[in-house]
Length: 135
Ligand SMILES: [Zn+2]
Image 1 (cartoon, rainbow, N blue to C red):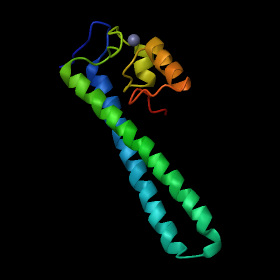
Image 2: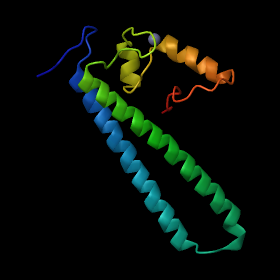
Image 3: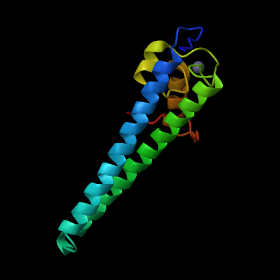
């Protein structure tokens, strides 16, 4: 059964896109982890490389944080599909454009609300959780 929303969204298509993306992110996270372990074994304690290693660790952690955030956004998106609120902006409650959902299937806000939120963040305002994970 294919559920279609008022604005023509095929929910099953978005569900698939979200699930595929989540799978991709999970896979890339475990690949990075494996690479990190291998790098450690290759180079147990070369003092000269220590700062470089720290730098790589920082990048790794930072990237992981972004991936975790993205995974959470994807699972929120899947939840909205289940709840029947998918594709509706959480801020203004207008439908999010199909074009935007195809580019960012986990989008929570329409383009104009997202821009307003981004502008508030750029202005230094603390907007918890509103920033979209960029990919
Ligand atoms: Zn909006």
